Length: 328
Image 1 (cartoon, rainbow, N blue to C red):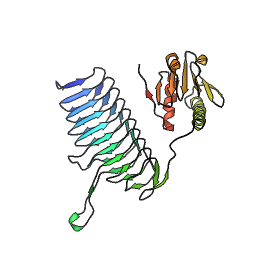
Image 2: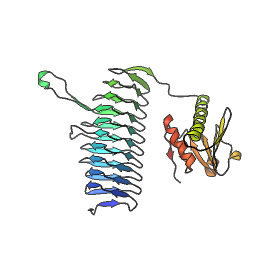
Image 3: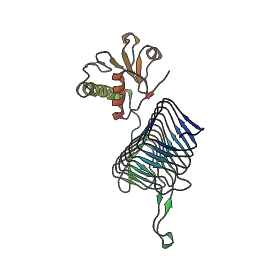
Image 4: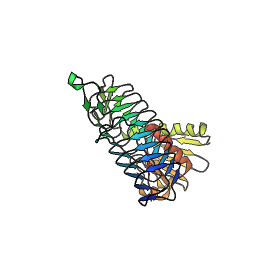
């Protein structure tokens, strides 16, 4: 049964789904299979894919473009839920627990909450862009049980995890913690105090062990890309079963498939490009972008619809590179 304030695209696929809201906006290409949602307002943007999950709030629920929420995930935050573009909520993730008027969760773009992670938004939890919360990890915004009048501890406080933070499996984060940009927490750690940006912290309780190097030289970056492309050559040949040949030098790699060439060079030369090439470099000149499909590392953007190119973009994710697609 629909409401007059519902706007559901004809191209959305809604199957065995219960929507309890007076205001629903569901965009093109959305897939919702066996989903239960309760909200003041629900917004699901283009290409989001939700399966066998439950999402509850008395406020606004917003799910970004191409976000994925997998089976048996449960997300409950009284004041509001925001899930960014291309973010993945894995199977059996649980967001909930004690609710309050300040319960809210905001998850940025290109994040991942992995298998059986638990987040407790009694107070606000904020995740920046490109944050991963590993499986079986715990994030708490309250610590309360025993009677405070008997001298026992009691704490309610927000948690903020900044952009590009890696929380591996089995990490516990306690109320009031802020983790700075680009920080890495060691597996199995218990984070009781805030962690500065660009640092590595580990232990129970977690302590900062080092400040991470934040920049590489052009020569170092080039060497890494050459290694990645060589790995992809073998991956495509032996796993994807896509025969190919490789030609490489100190500053370039050409991988030739049946109907496609991956052309990497530190500087892309227009004269060597052919119609079915995918140009790969740190910066792709405008003339090459007009001529062929391309992948640009410095901006983490791409314009690719070729299957080989899509396989390579997916392969890059294992190295922490998540490319955004450019649409004309």
